[in-house]
Image (tube, rainbow, N blue to C red; front, side, top):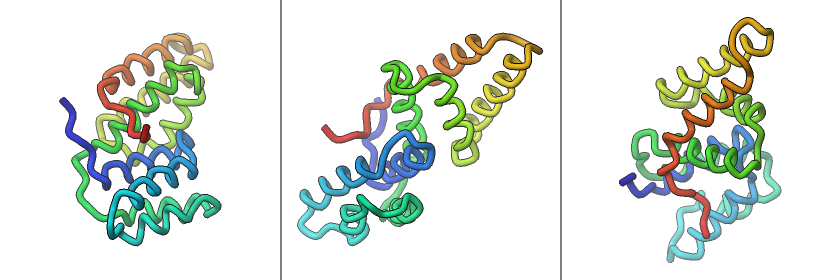
Length: 158
């Protein structure tokens, strides 16, 4: 069983997802609104996030970094990969687009994930220029890699 994510873990998930376009500022606002509604004295960062619907993405990313608390290892990254798997399975994102988004984020990921993503990125270039394999084989490898994150529940409220 996976650990219950802390608010800091969820902030990291939202930071990563917002950075690569797998969630929106509006979704961050919904999350922070729930915290503000549930807490008698919410931390000011959640009040700021609740008011950030029209804020620039970089400002929201800074606020997410400022969420207090302790992260549970790489749980935020695992939540993102589980979310990416669900989006891919639901057809909400193409394998090509998802690979591009995740590869751009690779340096923010745990070393083993970064290595896997960079390997997939290399493989897609080889497949596209006809040197080795096919793009479908690479996309199948991406789906297989993401399937190991299936157990991570949706971080979205509701």
